[in-house]
Length: 259
Length: 313
Image 1 (tube, one colour):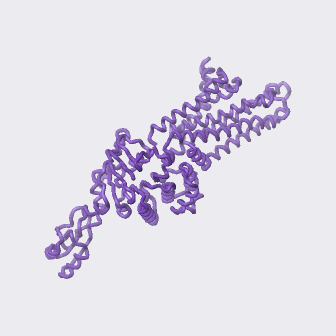
Image 2 (spheres, rainbow over the protein chains, first blue to last red):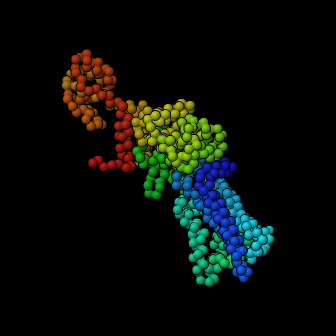
Image 3 (cartoon, rainbow over the protein chains, first blue to last red):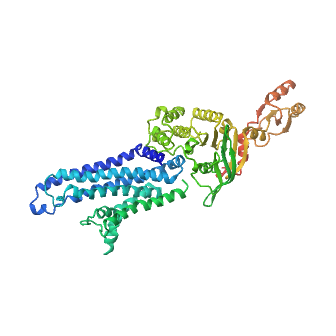
């Protein structure tokens, strides 16, 4: 396993797409902070009654949501780029234990995604707080210590998306197919679910991947297309299921199929 | 040591390898020959544990490849030179492979020098020519200094210098006691490189022989053309030669057509025939040795085994 981990870590940091994905993520954090600057500027010109409904939270949360997609791309590519080039056969010839290879890939991609995700969500939260300074935004009255855990949980969802992408990549063995599936799960299906009749929009909307971090943090689904019927524990369990069930199928497929 | 026993591999309704058995021993270069689609690559894939055998077994050093702890230290393989990530540098491609099998990092530089890629080690593989990729693939196979080496069509895309380099490399590896299996669909190449030949067609074994045996088996003698065939026949027959009239079987276009009568002589070499004809004052218009017919032997052996064949126009 250590050999496989070392090899996968080397692989991930020796191709440019890794750095492009991380650069895109970092760039989006900069965009979020610039938008916060703009919002602080708008705030200063607003009358008091408008200020009461001027919210910063949606901007703070968009970073983690976008990072989820970026790192899902990384997860997909970590597998499909090997199938596209045929390098997967070199990999399996070097490391014939395929489940170990998959586990090592998942550990490496998952760790990178977790670090990137936390940097994004915590960076968005602390950065925007710093930028608005002492302006009393109505949804920023709680202490940093009170709000931070929600963002930390949101950061873990980035790793969930990355591993979901990795598993889909291993199952579909096609970059295009896996990316389309990820985007469907990330945003398109939730949009469709939102238009289902009551109470199904609420129920199914609660188990959509992007709906889970807020529920796991014990927050409601106000102003969103998602539902919030799950308890924090149940939401965390569904997040874990989104990671491990597809990984299990991927492991089965890798060992059953010819490389 | 490579052993393949009663190996069968089916992909759906297609049988790629059909009850194939052979062994490859250390210390020799063994050529694995067959037309396109004969099952060479499939056999190698099963040997490397990439594809699962439908039945039978393929063993490396007496065991299954998939059960090897650090396989690259025992078996080096080049299957497809194009199977590399174009965005990775040559050094890094070998770097991750070294990590995967706990091979000392210094080996990466060593094998890059050995295959002549030291100067482009920091270049991305995407910009490599097919010949450079072949060299990189060979470097990867040599990385773990393994005792068993398998190369699938290693001379594809190499220039004449590269072809000669591969030939010497393979012979050197075998001379050092390693087991070397090289697949090819070109007899002419294997004739110069291999000691033993395993010839397959349609997934079945056609011949498991040495290059010399095959050459002997298909020896066709010397084609001689002279305006006095009857006199020459008498002279050569008296010297112990077996003389047949006509250019013999398997002759190419243009052979034996021309002035004078054609004879096929077995049992005498070109020099002996020339000397005897000169001594008797018999003019010769053509003396062509027909012993280098491995290519023909191969064509004949695999005639029924080619998977794809163009229709003669």
